[in-house]
Length: 384
Image 1 (cartoon, rainbow, N blue to C red):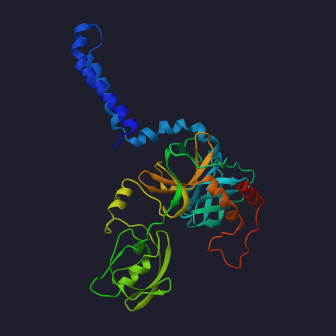
Image 2 (image 1 turned 90 degrees about the vertical axis):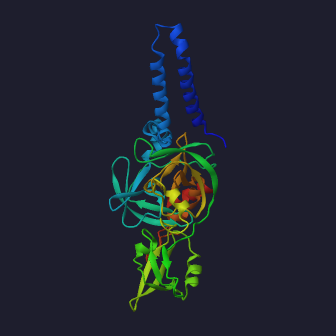
Image 3 (image 1 turned 45 degrees about the horizontal axis):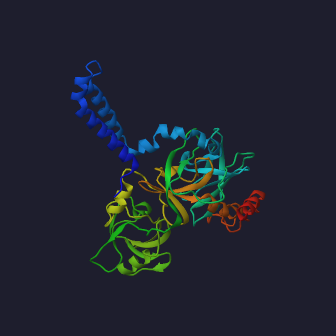
């Protein structure tokens, strides 16, 4: 197994310290007026150990490193927004149209949305389109003459390339390196987060895991699940087979019997949560970090090692030239984040702007918005 280049550096530093210690008697004998070799060795050892003990994230993603990317993100930061719900940031977004078009992550948009620009202005925004295959959403602000992102339209970011996550601020949120080429990210199985009573054949709940979809939606011990998305459920095995068809992030409606009454509940399925059988890998993946709720099941995305918070996803990712190479779409692991390539995102802008992908909660009798001139331009540019 090969050792990272950074580790070789620390090894050489420690070897230099050891060599200094062995050289002390000779140095003391030959150069009596020079500084004390023991003090020199002690200082060298202390400096080396300090570098060794600094977390890797601080070396690759600390404030000094991020400030070095200040000029790189300067232009893109002007066209980046903080996407807010209830006064709190839930995602970042990028302005892709001068009349207030903003691309962001769809999964976190639960409630009235606003966008805050780098200059401090904040605008209400409405969701005009959601692309479920990529978890992207298009927002529309009532604003004019806004700066827009410079998108890389030719090819994907290359493996080994430095990338910086842009925010509406002077410095980037974080920096990292592209780790894996663009590929389809498979969906992850969705879990309700319950144990069933194994003493009966009916799907009776015996345990609800903390932090699970079941707990969030109000499922209780001794509830009997009788129907999921209008499909009848009669046995434990039938429930297992039915739930196995769904992936993390899917919304299911189900009916339960509780104390002689029939109740209707709705849950958003999640990956495994702590405490569930075979959750060791999930626990290790979450260690010391918070992950995005929707972090799998994208038609195309590339992976980079930037350490992000879930609410820092949705916005632009730039290369060393300041060009937008992608849009962060999920924090998927301790050192794994996914981004939708810019050249892929561009091909979805037209449908997202036109109303062809209007969110489901829009009433059916509400007319779809007419295709906007900027949407037509985006479509033409993407085709070229």
